[in-house]
Length: 132
Ligand SMILES: [Zn+2]
Image (cartoon, rainbow, N blue to C red; front, side):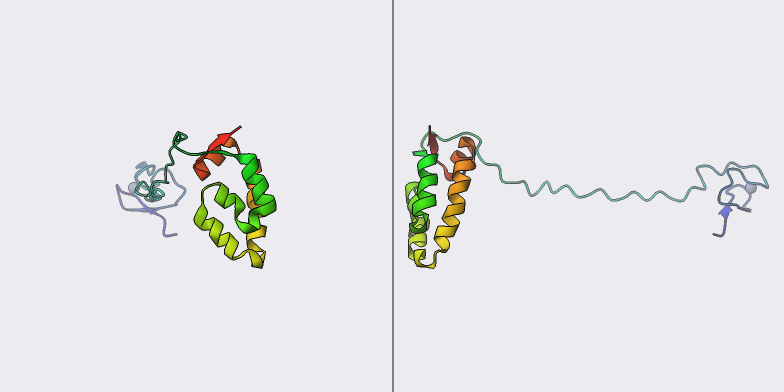
């Protein structure tokens, strides 16, 4: 390090010195290296996370979570739970691919998720009202 230049007399000083050893000028604040402000992380306020309606819509059909779960576990390969939940398109898709056993595997997991999710989450996710 070249040393800190005294703002008063221009003499080089030891970086650790607090006062100029020639003129006694305080080297405190003036001699501190500039504090580069770290740029604040961007707040991505323009990209708001999608806000889902917190209210369960009364128009949603009433469905049983247990029925949906059991259908998914045992008949999920044929899309039964999708038909039950009103997702006819997905149900047909599952049915078309049932011979691959992939829908059955997916449905098995879905069935477990159905049965494990809270009524509230289930309701919002599948747009149904949960029958107790
Ligand atoms: Zn000085």
